[in-house]
Length: 158
Image 1 (cartoon, helix red, strand yellow):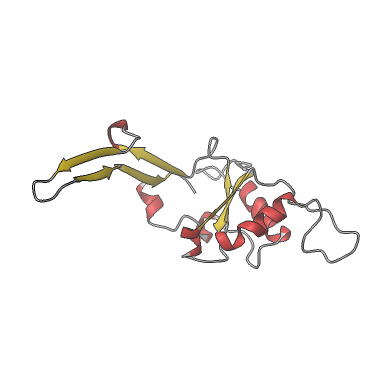
Image 2 (cartoon, rainbow, N blue to C red):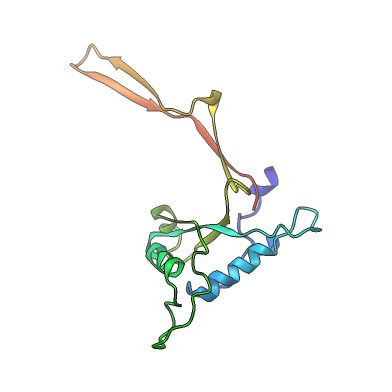
């Protein structure tokens, strides 16, 4: 697991980078195809992964929802419309301001985390709830409180 931290999670050597360019049904479908071609660590078997979660910056969250739910291609300007090849591609659309701080255009497709988790969160001593400590002070009227949540995160697989 240590070697996963030596390289970025998404890297050309891992064959997990989809087409570049503005987000569109074509780039989303291209990333889907890249994900489907992922192989096991021995590079012998296709994993045949399917996207379940779209993860990206808040600037693209609305566009992702539109692409995911529109029956016609939202980028098509024709009156009759073309079918949307990425309709319902994702079960969940997750947008985050933390990703906005890194890039307003980079977005990611993740497989179903219950089948192929990418990240793990672990809690010290199995304590998943915050611990609250308080202290009364002689120097002032009131109570000082602190909330402690001990946890760690790790990348499981790309």
